[in-house]
Image (cartoon, rainbow over the protein chains, first blue to last red):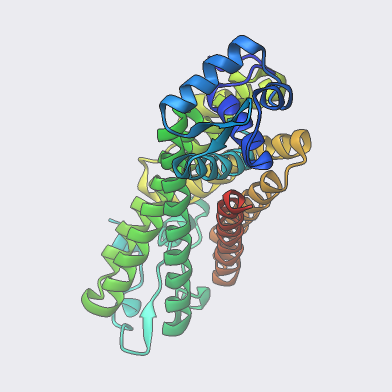
Length: 94
Length: 261
């Protein structure tokens, strides 16, 4: 069975997080949390996943930590965007 | 046998400048349904150039079909989505069917010049075409079924269609029934694509809808051509269907550019 309406898949959340980081260049966790519409616990878990897969990297800027996209992350984001566009043509959600 | 229904004078008409055109060659067979024997004026012979153009359209359409199949497969590896699997398999059948039919027709026209091969290639393609449209429609319906808010009626409509057994194994009715069945299945696909587009107002969904709509119109015109034994009608149908595949190609190119924004 498919997901209930309105429930985001893991890939959808990855895409939302990566998009925020791409838009901001270097994104602080609060911005990611706010713009990707995630709770703190879920943010920690998903950001951890992405870091583990080397798709994003944590950088320290002064006293704050920020996240940037790695080259692999950029590639993955590109592929996800393409997949999203393709799927939308057939009414399939990511 | 099928070949017996083709007037012998046609068999001798094969030469370098013309080719016996029995594309979807159950046209003679379809006349049996209505008791009208085929005559020489019914346009089975097309110019060699028109034949080449038709074959080229089939090659391009088949290539686009395989391209859609490849992308659906590629994204399925990423997403593990059942509807994508259906789409991939359906377009693969359609693409392979078109390419194999076009290849066999070309080979047969240039080298073997045997009508029987034309007929058999078309028969195989017709079956593959119906199967492909059915698989694509199931993929759409699966998505509709698992997302009940979108369109449960479309899914149930498909189930009604599937329950009716096609008479594809009866050769003399193959052409008419396959074309008719294709139009019916495509109508379901178009209905589903319309729902997707009206729900999302997404430009990519609009392109897919346009593509399927043109393919369905092409099939419907071809069906009319088969029934009325009009070569012109049949070729206009083929051309319309080809335009549908072109729209799908544009969709693939545009959606592929999304990642570059």
